[in-house]
Length: 274
Image (cartoon, rainbow, N blue to C red; front, side, top):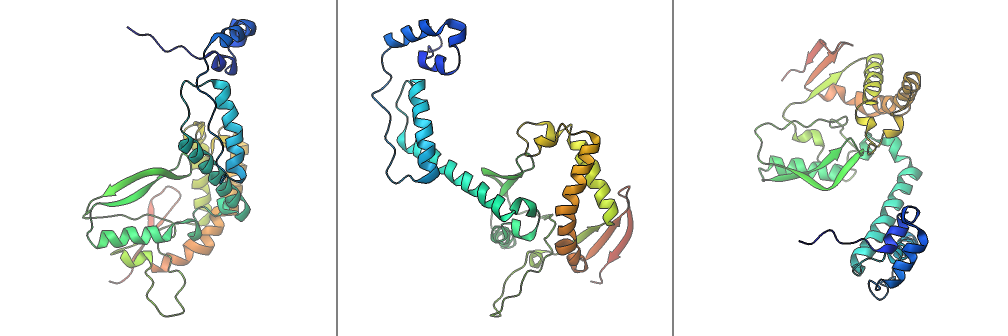
């Protein structure tokens, strides 16, 4: 019975095993080992900027590791291109201040949402939708859910009642709410919403924020005072602005308005005449 394949000596050195075994012994052993393959793939000429820089960084690392088979050039190129695109996207988000606009109308993929609702209304099946992760604070790549002709579909969102800008040419432009048979707006005073937001932020420090993969992991070790100050700042800078500019103005468009008190009990009900 074959055992585990031995690790190349170069990889042991790269991973720091030289301290345990002795660098001279490992280097002598490495010289006696056959070369894994003659050289590594050359950087494609069309790679530019960050993609080329990524190639020039990763390829020498692969050579040090003495891999037992030649890396796939196309896969390596794809990794470099995707890395460059990810960095470019992060810079764009930072430059345009888009992370400060999460939940604002411009942060949604409106064409995709309208297409999804249109296909649902048309009775197509199955209809696919992306999966959003609160852990990474983004859509999960290459992951979708399928909706197969539901009898009732609940669409929840901060700005789903937005009317949007009317077209100057008079052409029909669908709004998300055009696909709704009935709409409900959950309302509460600003002070109550702030209280809920801070309480939730404090609770998440020991749960979701504690995960190292979480986008908000940097908040996990905040003290109570620091967490309250941080949550209040985020609320005033982002959430409150979105509430006043985009969410609250859509309240009159709802068929039913339910106003909650601090204990989450419904205190007021306003129903539009049907």
